[in-house]
View 1 (tube, each protein chain N blue to C red):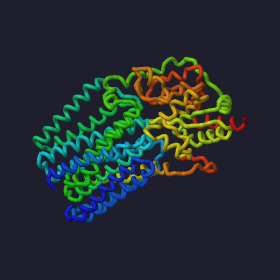
View 2: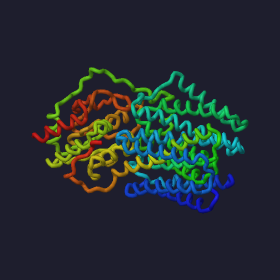
View 3: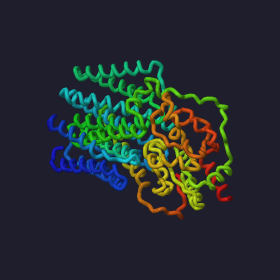
Length: 458
Length: 103
């Protein structure tokens, strides 16, 4: 940061980051926005090497950048679109971990420094570590390497408060009397706190937490910028911290959940309830692919409700084929997209765009909800929680208050489901037992292929 | 740069950050989160700075890990966001095109 031209380059990079976020807020400019951000990052990184900072260990630095870029780039290229949310969570976590490590190294090199810088160091270590371990847990949940249900640790609330208090004490103590062992203790405590913080969060709340941890990482990067006296880190980190906080609020609103309920719900046991799979012998009506094909073919209006199960089965293309066949027979076909269909807001739009489903057929929830009452058949493919009326009626349900697609108002409802297993939120769906509901069990792609074949034979 | 100047930058950045994303549609929540996620990967610079002046092996090791993590965040973040947005490029309905969906 010695010469003014490198500072100028940093200013350009900062402006590019702002334009990137601005661009990402609107569909037309989103892709270019992202590229602007990448250009800004590249510019800032290259310029840093020529800005006259001390560069010992240059080979190691370059090697680490190359290896890291390869890991990040290749995993981002290779990941299946269905698994993209957990990859974003993972990327976010490692960013937080990097910020925490940087502050630790700076502390080891330069010593404690003045109290404000020390406080910034402490902040980076705590928030960065929480983001790191918390994101790893969300990754494990979404990857289904551990249960996606809320995990209630025995006396969890007590333990969490205890660890939080210990973290606070260590933080204050460290600022008052800087010692390296305290910094290590703080690091460990924060990592544990991050795990405890995310464990009780379950089901549909996970994306909100990823977004919040994203904002956390942003703030810890900003604080590390203060520690290092680097303006670009402060700007970029703060931009992400602020926009991420707003985005978290927006997401929570889209799902009809106050943020506090998301974060503290599990401690109060509200997201833990409603886990019952109910009576396994309750009667449901199941049908053959042929029956379903006939129902769809002779309907005037059909609404398709795609969910995560569709994406997992990679059946987007088959669903589109079904829609095309129905349209060709003169049936009016629309897709109803719940804001959190898939695993994250907007995830389903990405997945359907991948299958070349025309934009105009994708209807958002507020637009399509009044139409269900005038619809002959609703075909729900691999979705459950987003059509569960318990969100409207059952105050004890973890999804209570979430706006849902009103499929229960249609004349007939067809569910393509793998089994009677409840959805991500782990609660029973009453629509399944409704007399006007028909179930077709099996893998989504398999079932759809059979329905398509039956339709063609009609 | 003194503390007050840095604080000024911090506070102004908060307002800019809130302002730029104030009108985002639900469809773009995930790409926006992912893009913002990539931007904080710029923490990579911090890793380079501390490793460049590190002498003790422990400092170098931790610094190199930080660079590694930071560049995963930065490069992976931008690439995965681009992949998501690739899907949004305006394409006219192409009924002849073979249905996709096979990864």
